[in-house]
Length: 85
Image 1 (cartoon, rainbow, N blue to C red):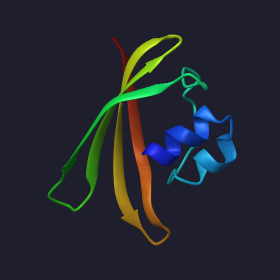
Image 2: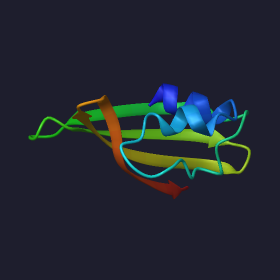
Image 3: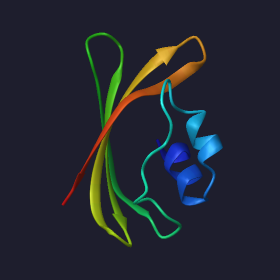
Image 4: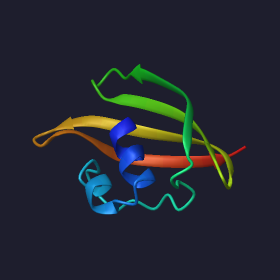
């Protein structure tokens, strides 16, 4: 997750996309000033992970939840959702 967010912070959506199992990065709120406040993960029964990341950005504070699973190409983000708080 840190590498994905760092790629977006650096303005490199192509590298960020390499961490996704599908889709493309769409977190327009992540910029060079984004800071990770906290990160928690939990393993699911199927071996995947749910990772919750709280971030402080110039546009406000956000929590993004990522569903991460092992694929043939390594661990990939398969789903994500975001909430502004």
